Length: 296
Image 1: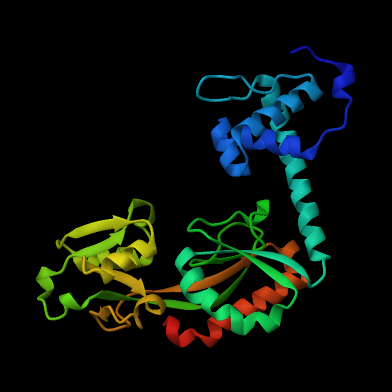
Image 2: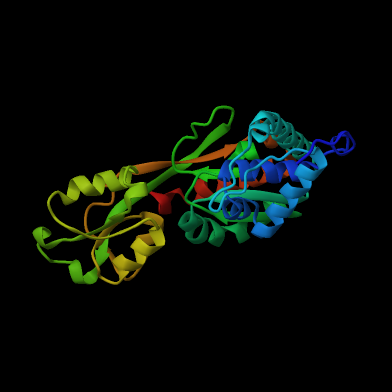
């Protein structure tokens, strides 16, 4: 691709730079398309348009990947700084916004669906005019990149620059279907988290408790463990808010035997100034505080 003074003088479209960054980070059209929530053909078209506008070939087209060319590598840091400025602009705009609008909330999936959502109706008067965009996800949303405005997490956020507030605690217990009641403990078998979640406190506690006794299923999804436990497949460590009032389950040990986990609310300091973000944050804190009995 030949350099063109006329082309390179055209103003850049930030969206094209955003596509460039996604493809540079993912190194494939399909990966960038997943991150951007578009078709892979859209990624290719936008990147091709950027290359034409700049008069520079940014990527090598290989069968399985699109690595950056030397010219693309040279522009990557500049594009990253553009992204940071664009994100900062967006956060500042949100901080200056009104009480009406959308607030994006990232929460652990089952905590969102089984604890938080059933309590939203009672909290609605605290955030009239606000639309809550709730995403259930096990990973930690990147608040610096604007993936969410608020994030509920089960450990204190470690990313620098985030503001964090402890909302309360979540207790866990060892639960099983009624068919396990009365069986000797050496007959117990267990359901646990998969490899990606093996280091969470409740899984470490369960592995110590199990000792040499077998695990018959691992899953990376709390809802799957819950259903396996309800079906009698084995014993699982489950949060009390999910299992304590479930008629299909029975607490197999004292309710305070398993560990507790802290519930944290994280927000970027720029976004925290937004009236609607503050309103939702206060409503979440109220929900956790008022339901602390069901959590622990």
